[in-house]
Length: 214
Ligand SMILES: CCCNc1ncnc2c1ncn2[C@@H]1O[C@H](/C=C/CNC(=O)c2cc(-c3ccc(F)cc3)cc(O)c2O)[C@@H](O)[C@H]1O
Ligand SMILES: [Mg+2]
Image 1 (cartoon, rainbow, N blue to C red):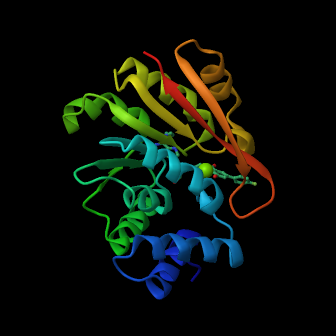
Image 2 (tube, protein in one colour):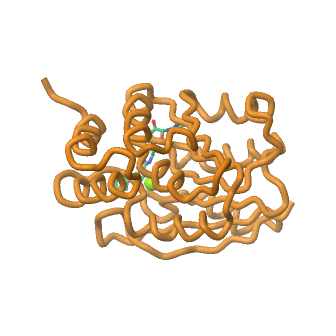
């Protein structure tokens, strides 16, 4: 019977990565997706840009939209200061189940809360459910046509404060043109483009970092 790509990625992590070593899980997935089969992880090149922003911001409360196999959740969690939390949302139960195991194998489950469900349903509930005031940092890596509506929803739900930072993957490939136009055109954001490449390829892609000004 045919396994799914996320199942094959999890199998590779269990075969090759050292249990409890987040870095080895990240490197194992990068090796596999570069040399065996491509997958839509943020990857090593753009991942380094994401790492530098996480280290600069040192978020107490961070949100990720689109967990997929948990690659970026593990990458981010390994950099979080003590008693900081990454909340990551994934609405595909198959992907969520794989991601939970990847996160556990990496030994970062005490820093990551994986919510199974669509962002549109959960964003309005975040404050109450998690006793949150706002997010210091948000990583957008889910459906590209949902970046803008979800950003507006986070604004409306008061989940962004002056200085909150949005980091969006794939603003060139596959692209999120309406989102880019919004954050670059709005006086409420200070936006910056970090040029890079689509994970594991030479195709141009990039990450947009946008500071919410309130
Ligand atoms: C209700 C829809 C919006 N809300 C949502 N709430 C929670 N999880 C959501 C989600 N949308 C999507 N997801 C999940 O995020 C993930 C989706 C990510 C979409 N990403 C891409 O399409 C993507 C695609 C590429 C890509 C680039 C070039 C190419 F030729 C082919 C693919 C590269 C990337 O880095 C990407 O991130 C899945 O796990 C999905 O189940
Ligand atoms: Mg992506």
